[in-house]
Image 1 (cartoon, helix red, strand yellow):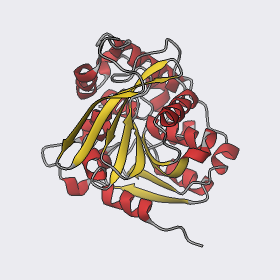
Image 2 (cartoon, rainbow, N blue to C red):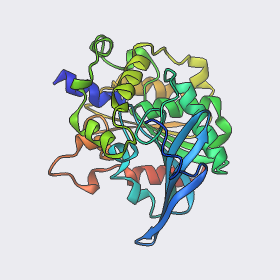
Image 3 (spheres, one colour):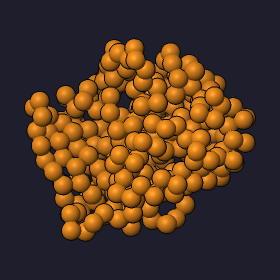
Image 4 (cartoon, rainbow, N blue to C red):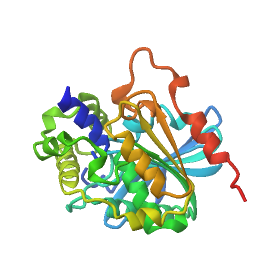
Length: 297
């Protein structure tokens, strides 16, 4: 159980190039309309990557950033249609994940943040709301620190900022992480979309190494965040309540919600979906209320 749980938490923490004949860099690959919702996807040249992205719906932009070992669909398939009813949802796949290739360099949250910033520049998005889950939440923290001009509001789902934010056993297990212990649904999700399924081992190893080498984000950097922030964890999350409270105290303009359930259950992350899943269990209405809230004077 502990092994499965930790790889679900690689969403915490935890393709080679596409065929040039079928790819147009910085241009959408397809544009379709379904149930009045516009969808397009494509690849963009981003700091040495051919980064895959999707755009769903229209309206004020919200950027979704997945966790380790994940794809757009394994993290966000349940919530994208809900947000896209009223917003432009921009979902990305980061280095070595899903349809995005590997740049043959170790992963860092700082580089991921810079990659997302470059993608948004390519898409001519000057400011957006952000929802980052798990590893993606840590990346979102780095976006707010390194590129504050891009951030309107942000939602940090099960984000890690300090090593003491998870149980001690987490770090020992990460040092001995093995691909065979990764949840099958995440493996299947990767293989379903990846151009080269041999990249699965690369993705796993890069995510694991990044966590082994993870260092605390300094308090002064977290304190510098000005964007209104909603911090969410599950009450059975791998992220501890104490860590979420500490993060809440360091981000001046923040709110905190602890939701019944495990790591990512509140957004319908694929490894948490059970036969009795109900859309009403998702926190989308709470997030929308937060995003629509007018600033107090």
